[in-house]
Length: 375
Image (cartoon, rainbow, N blue to C red; front, top):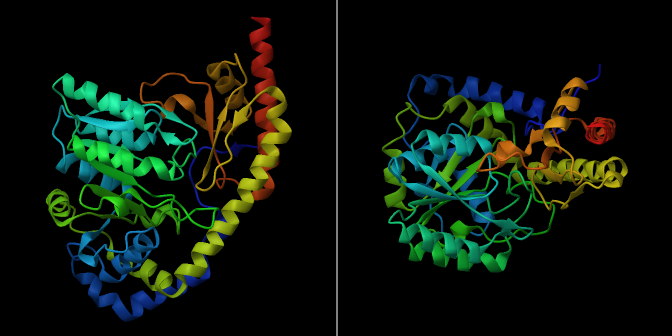
């Protein structure tokens, strides 16, 4: 039985420059090998932090300084550092009503309570945020943090409208809330320009989190955050890991310093091409059954609403029998509700396998619907 995996957020294999990375790795060992006997610098390798700063500046934060940037072992470590350093067990954290499953897990492991805010097709609703913040304040439990994915949101693919960004920040600042801005999909943008980052609009109250996982590969385990000195130092005080891998950082820095702009354009082109293939497949195999979705303007995911009345549980059982994997809606719902959505990764399967895989999903929808009718 042929299996298809649209679940994991993996980069397209064609986007990983293996030969050039191998050259960078060889140069790293031959030129810098003896430097690896030292522990990494507290903030991380300067050369890769400079690359990260270039990416941050390209997203509008032209005033960011190199000393604001800290390398981490993936973006998840940065989120964990913020959760442990900027809040205490029992505090509440504002999140979008659907959000990244692993981030929810990390935040909860720090003893923090997630407070969801409704979204629409233009991102988090600022009117709803105002009501939630007022309600939490009235309860005597004002939130300390907000964890948000404003651009190419995971899982929904929605981007927060530009005109909502300043009002959102006005609210969070008025309530003393520090924002963790997860911008890991910023480089995967299909449009000429993305909306300004929250960090670029309020650098003193936003911790910007980025990643090299989507730009290079998750196996490098390289992320970073940028924050004002007071926030940076509080987070650094909780980073007790001996430093972020200098081997990975040196290889990535050597390659990206020479190839950054061309590499970003190439990755965007590959992912956008696969996105177009997936949308055509969804139109062909899922739309006739009544599924709906928004076309993403970047990122890795389609967030697909199931046909009316179709049971997510019934679909999951049929899909497992057919060897088809996808992200279940309940995994991204803050309340854990079995919502009728699936998350499909654009890049986890090669482009020529997308249509056959979505065809299997369409068949699974039909079988799940027929089970409902029989019942």
